[in-house]
Structures are given as structure tokens and as C-alpha cells.
Length: 95
Image (cartoon, rainbow, N blue to C red; front, top):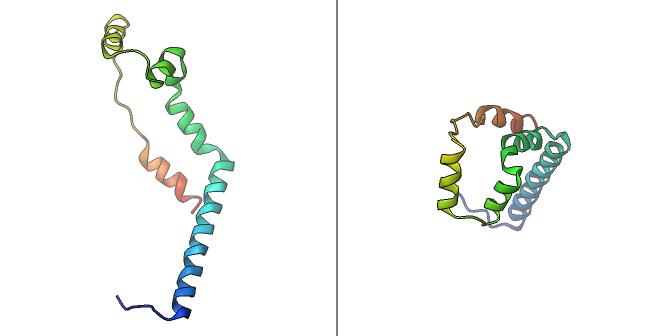
């Protein structure tokens, strides 16, 4: 790669970087305003909203307590898709 040490080159490089950053911020703002991504995240992790699981997230409980809960309530989580391709396409709509 060639060196860009002229003041003009450095300025143009900086301007291009700032333009890219601004475009990214505009895309992020549009994604937030749209709300589709936030809705997906809320739905995906809605199971963590109960008082018990909020306590676990806050550092409460122990592994023994959690193991008892899993056995007593016959908790058997099944793998499910993270919908990566859907989310990548969702983000690509904004960039």
C-alpha cells in the first residue's frame, strides 16, 4: 500500500472516514426508529422477564438452586434458530 503523507491525502481520508461514520449513524437511527430489530430481541429473550430469571441475571441464586429448578419443573429447552440470515438481511435493508 502506498503512503499518503500529503496534507490533502490525510484530509480527504479523514473526510471519507467521517462520511462513513455519519452514514452508519443514520442507518442505526433508522433501524432504531423502525423498531423491527428491537421487537425481535424483545421476543427472543422474553422468557428472561420473570422475577426469578431477573434475579438470576442480577447474580442471585446458585447453581444447585438452578439445577433443582430444572429437575423439579422438568425444564428441557430445545434448540431454536437464531435467525441470523433474517437479521443480516434486516440490517442490510438500512445500509
